[in-house]
Amino acid sequence: MSDQVDICAKFEVEYTPCNSAEKLGIAIETIGKLPINGLRHLAENGTCGWYIWCSEE
Image 1 (tube, rainbow, N blue to C red):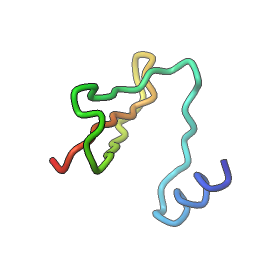
Image 2: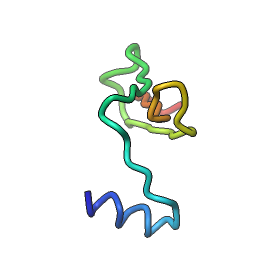
Image 3: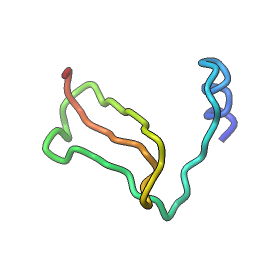
């Protein structure tokens, strides 16, 4: 966890951990492509806010 806290501090963003009961979004059809991308929105309705996809776009 300290690595996550350090990275957040480096980029001057608040560290907000995910709850293990929350869901994340992942684009299944892009798995296996590179690079791996992630975007975090505000958590709501049982989600952690993370959306993961793979590809250049």
